[in-house]
Image (tube, rainbow, N blue to C red):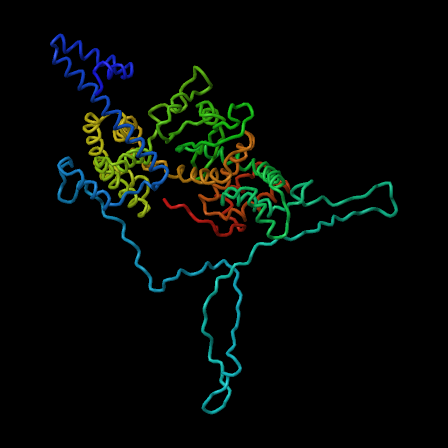
Length: 541
């Protein structure tokens, strides 16, 4: 049996000190103080254990769980059932009055959607076999009375072709001293062999299909054409440099808008000067004027987006990034580029933290998620009805703001009772910090209540990042920003990216006037005769 002296000697130094303090209080007869000390230590251990358990559960969900923020009505009801006596009183129609869901379109009996009309079409006549062309009763030849028609969707693989450019040379037979006149080359790359269609295809597969260059090289090898990843990298860089003026013009249009939405995501960038050889850069996305512009920054400092936003005077919507307050016009000592009264919050970021707490097992978060469900149904109805901004504002003030008021009343009351460091406490604190900024979204019908479009644009960056893993340099990351700018803007307008890039690369290399760049932007190009329907998939809201 271990003696008390031995057990004390085996205790860690910090616990030995606690034991010594408890023995002193007991010897002095200070039982109330001793009880308070023990209870205080137990509370600290409980809070720490709760926070660590929540972090572990969160890490496991990040690795193995679903990433969607959507929680069905059935899931909310299960959470309310778990709350039991802790659930707030519910009105007859449910905890939060829910607007009716938009009616689902009736299901057609045909089953199949019609094939696109713009696809080329050819006719294949299938004759009846010779043995069946005569009547078995009288032996007369059967007459054709029509055809039973069906459609087959076929795929014609892409193919390479070689265009031999033969530039005419002229010379005067009478005046040899005048030299030779040679037609200018129509190649888009003087010292290279790719045509505009091949350059466009390399970019589309990288930025739209997130296919790294080494996999493109393997794909081309199946067609019998050997193109190394380094060659494709040189051609890709060249094509992006050609398209850079279009990306710059898109950026100007975006920054001139009254309402700008912003967010960022990380990007691994090779750096020989970094201790690990790889640093964490950042890709910023800015959505405005129905276009998107991307910016690469070598770190997370506010000076990089601040340099881009020097002339911006509108409203900026984003998350709780602390750097927005540090962005100054003209550098240190200047005024804030985006003061507090012109910042808009994001409902998706607030909801995401509450959803994380709910999936971590804290069913109390279901109450807040129910309020959010009601708010987003109102927003969905406004979009379904295509309401003008004034009507949208009036509906928000009539229906949305009362729900927002109830939501924040619940958040403020609950926050005072939460254990610090737990996911729900972190979520409610974030919601409280963002309350003024998010409420500002409901003051103008032109504003969205979240940063959803930016999140969708950054999703494409995240998908590409999983495939090509890193950028080779800061310059390479800047070129990535150019690619995501032009193809993200194409996606917003449903433009076929391959047709657009093929056309624009050819026009720019042929000498396009700089004062007519607006005609090449996706929103204008899609209205021209060159536009073709996009074959890409649209991201769901």
